[in-house]
Length: 88
Image (cartoon, rainbow, N blue to C red; front, side, top):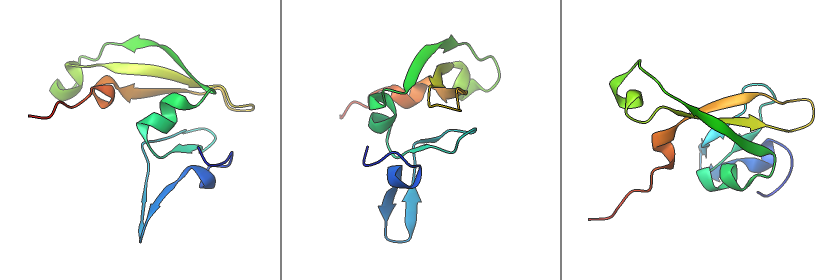
């Protein structure tokens, strides 16, 4: 992570701003899943089964708490997002 502000955590391409996850409460942004997992203020709380959509049902959600001061929100990320892709 480059800095502490949400703007410092963006990944920029010419004309495109990409992000892996944004905190819905404080607006912090993680450009990649690696940035998200490496952030000491992001803590894994657990797993939540999903019976809604077939593509989500297979993997469910991982629940993370953003322990930034004045935040503390819990974020759900589709577990499939963390599955490593194998090259053929």
